[in-house]
Image 1 (tube, helix red, strand yellow):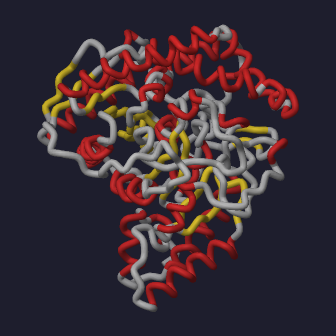
Image 2: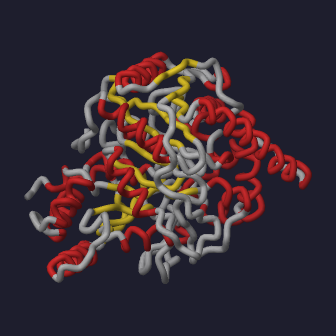
Length: 465
């Protein structure tokens, strides 16, 4: 039973429901793994073993009474430290929020608990959940378990590092500019950014966010198997009236043609040969599974969408954030905000209105394209995972990284789902691909992701390098 932490959420939930293992045994195994590897990773920055074991005991008691239990009953998971979990501080990687205790669970945490998941602990994020790297002045830096010289990704770097190392089968993440998809890519696991409105979200500890973040920020799962993404999506997406953006869309849509567009370099972006090779390999795996794959020279505009994403997101931080940034004084956050503001001049009210108007035009183009191709196969990033913290070394370095991350930044404005699928390693460096689909068609992406996964070597927990 010492290796229960190696199992997928799907396998573990089935064993627990069948009473072949207990939720307490599964939790003890996961906690032992956390104790063994987290000191080298700093992926989980706060946890309470007694609380996790009590939750597991409640699952076992419910099963013993013959009660119906949720789809994640007894499965150890982690929750990102930027969402409210009752009794815990929602630090968001900030010293100025280290005493911001949540009095109630956010909808996504409440849904995980309703599904029977056992929350192991809270995972690290950069200050303000800002970067594609994970370090802050309160909790410190998270290390990629595959290679400590590269970023674990961000802002859900702690979640992805934990999942990759076997600390929980599922990691909760958030994504406004790649913060689920990129950490999954960098740590060699899978990550799903769902459609806006699919998973309810809200933090009672703070005010409602500005319109840009409302349109772009989502919660979603990170896991080692596509099947676990499917299971956790169903659990996380249950209704909650506290989020007016939540949409009661079915998890399975109508039949669709198994047709995908392969775009190697959206908007002509620079793409490393290793990334191109991964895309072509994924296309071959899809074709072997019966998909028709057509290479296309381009997608609808991504750069225009990315430019507007930056404008709308920075409009929020410019209005509410400068004082908080100065009080926090995190050097990484100060550098990145400064770089971003150099690239995006402060908008006028008309600029802001134009951005919201143009969003509709861009989304229409994408939806029409997705009518022909239910799946778009494209890069997660133009480069293999970056050397850790290279974004804060210079403005020019940050600008190069931002250009490579076009597929991350361009998607959120549109509210479309995106799936990062790991496909293997280049030496010790993970590589993978991104799948993009129509609104509320995560089922299409998961089907394509399963075909790609089946054609390779399944992701398994790794010992920290």
